[in-house]
Image (cartoon, helix red, strand yellow):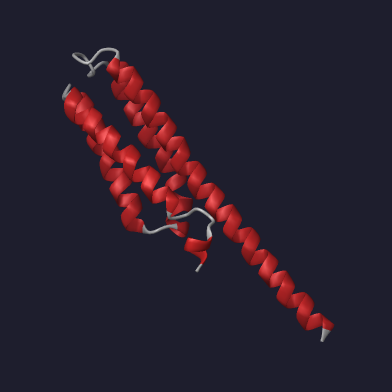
Length: 131
């Protein structure tokens, strides 16, 4: 009887630790992207007329590439449609920067940051998400 309890408690502990690690990784991935986008937005705000500089184009592609490094594991943990929406947003930002369209790039960054903040709350460890 004691062995069964030990096994059950061990399984529960493994599940809890797994959920905590999953939530931490997903939220850290989103927070990292949010931070990068907000910093990039500040950089774009400094020169609104000429955002199509090589440095800005390179940084937008770098942000996208850094996101791609996390996507493989994230696809195992979260819904693919959410990842697809983030990918589309990052691609649009790059395109708007290449076209020197500050208004659309800024709007897309703001929209993507808001989406990431809302989407990351779905992965918080809370009673609402557990039950």
